[in-house]
Length: 143
Image 1 (cartoon, helix red, strand yellow):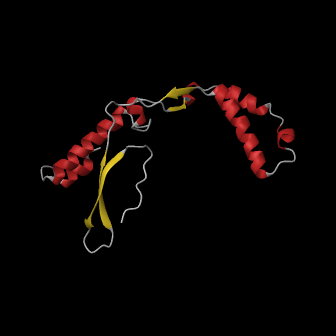
Image 2: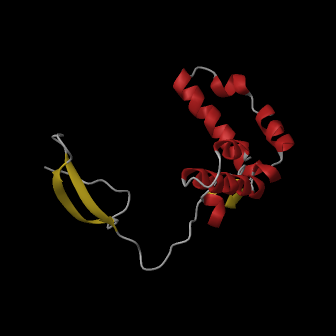
Image 3: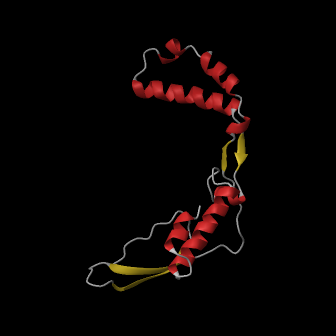
């Protein structure tokens, strides 16, 4: 019997039903529907813009910290927290943030148009090979 369904947002999952077991398993299948909002919400996710960062200033800010005095008499955990605090302060001053939106949130930044085109051709060749329209060697040569 199902006890709990966990989601990261309220009202995201609905129509949860228990189905019969799958084959000889003692586990039961769960059928559910993922509910969508009526209007699409834009992401407010931000990330660090390292391309516009001032690493010289970053190095200077961290170099000016009197580490002996800042970490004196502290344990490893407290020292780590102090270091992180200085690091995040320097990061805030030197590395600007940028909003992630649209396609950039769905794919990694290294996956450019050229690579996407190559993947598209590879998928098409694979589909052709599976349907018997393309020879295996031709599929393997596809870049």
